[in-house]
Image (cartoon, rainbow, N blue to C red; front, side, top):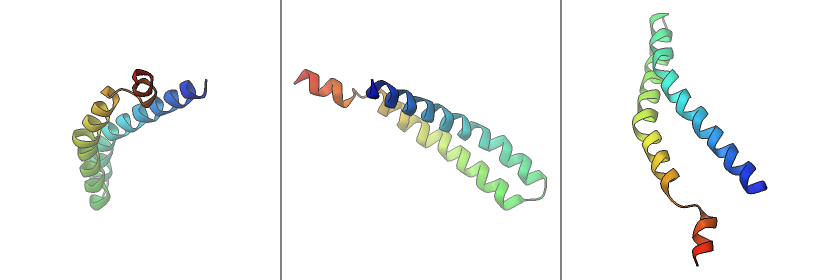
Length: 74
């Protein structure tokens, strides 16, 4: 039971982080246009890096078999 709760928590966390990376780009543009250029640039840069680097790595890690599945095979 705890395994399913833990797995659900990590899936929700991954979805939230993925959406945050997508929302950081337009938010950064908006913040930059309101006058906070440095903060806006950091948001755009962070969102871009997260979307193109972190998200694909997390997707690849999702494809790996879990530890419990590997221990069952042995």
